[in-house]
Image (tube, rainbow, N blue to C red):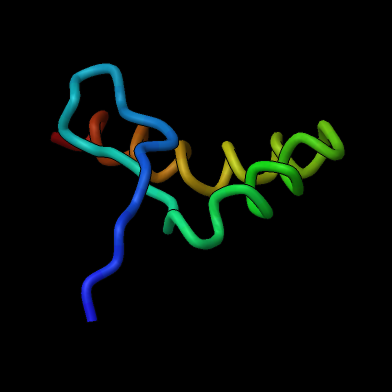
Length: 57
């Protein structure tokens, strides 16, 4: 089964990107926008490992 995804966020150097499934994009986006704490946790979970990886290289 093929599925489509939309780009949600990309690292500054362009080496890493985070995509969200098209079917779930609206509900995920609404959830993240519903509370600043949700968005903060999401960014910490997604971006913290990317930053750590870049420092180790």
